[in-house]
Length: 582
Image (cartoon, rainbow, N blue to C red):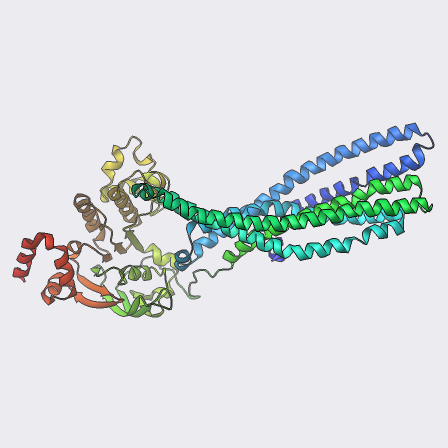
């Protein structure tokens, strides 16, 4: 884990070297004060060398000014290195998230994922900067202080340093408890973020159902967990700091008593004793820094561990011999395909069917039957457990994800729009498109006139997830996006089911235009929208119960007939006429 963390320093080797060099300078300068103090007490003051007192005082002032500049460099440039490392980790994490399979997002809330990228990496900057610097400076100062104190009184120095093992034993005992406590705190923060993200996203539903109290209760569950986790971490920190502070205080007591005894027995002069008392801070100060670093290390590494957990997850893997295709056409073939999201329940069971090139196949049936899952298998969002899916001459598993998905356009019921303008959201379908192509796509989707009625036209901001648009406007915007992409294969997953009749007519007209010349799969709740499909599959419990054209399925008087009849009960006269016709 530590080696992996250190690898992020590689792009900043030269800056890191300068930072450590400046830290060394700061450590060395710290040794000047006790050395000059000893000379003054033992030589300059007793021998009345006033000129030397002034000269060394001026020298010390100049040296401290240099240390000020070095500290500025360490604080500024060292933190900058830490920020760049954090940015690189965030960059790598973002790329990783783009490559994770759909199944990961099925099992993890957005707020928790965001917490990994923000809160968990927050302490990385401090650890990346202060970690190596504190270790280097502390070890350097402790080594130099040992050597210098030994020149004053080696026996007294050994007595003082004999307390050091006790400090490291305490650090080792409490270190693990601190890491567990910090990790638990980060997990509780992730739960709070997840709850907050869900509540804010669903604020309109909350207000509509007047359920603010319910949301508060759900939020407070995570909030209380955070308090408990933070309490545990503060308890571990309190034990650590109080114990280690007691040990550092004990150093001063041991120094005072031992030095006093040495002075009483004539083993050390008064000047050296006074210098030793002053110089003991050369040892205690870096030791305190090392203690503080232990807390910082546990805090930073607990976040880095959670970061690494995601970085080590398996990504969507293409076949080693996967090929790129510019244009993908041909029949879509499901050959004995089975799929389950988990081992408990199979969603698609040994399913076989063919969608002819350029034709439209409709998938209908009860909710939960597997229709949307079929739509997710075609772009290879999920790998089928058994069987084969082909498009033309290609097994989809032998195609690169990029080339496969570039040839498929998807319009879903739940439209996702990005923050930005109308133009930005349409352009998402084909980032390399020209302005005229975007305009043409908007016209084909029957959204152009509405966009132009806005004061800023295509530059109008649509708000977060298109909050300022109606359901029909969002849907037409997503259709314009697919028009711009211009794929040979089209998947319409209940694209009109949540719309009023007037809006549905507009969108259905746009979809009818979009389907021309494309191999299309339509998932439909309203059976009136699929009457003209070349073939209709009735999907239930992961298998095909019936298939055929609309007229054939009505004549069979099976499941499709029952579904169709239940939808048209409100128009019994029209339904009876249709039955008489058959």
